[in-house]
Image (cartoon, rainbow, N blue to C red; front, side):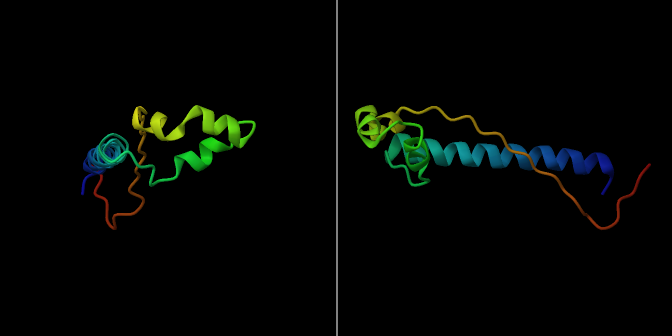
Length: 84
């Protein structure tokens, strides 16, 4: 593999991972309405008490959530790299 090809492959893989995760999150939130990842458990810690969290109505909020996914993928070793 040429070094340029490695960078192109890294970008393609990052794009694929990002797209796959976004599809997964939108499917779980919009289609099934379930927080199977457990974001609510982490969000609960941002509220002063459980009552405030209940008032917020996490279940409905998650159904309308917007997601921003960043992926970072690096090929560390490929064996032999040919440099021009």
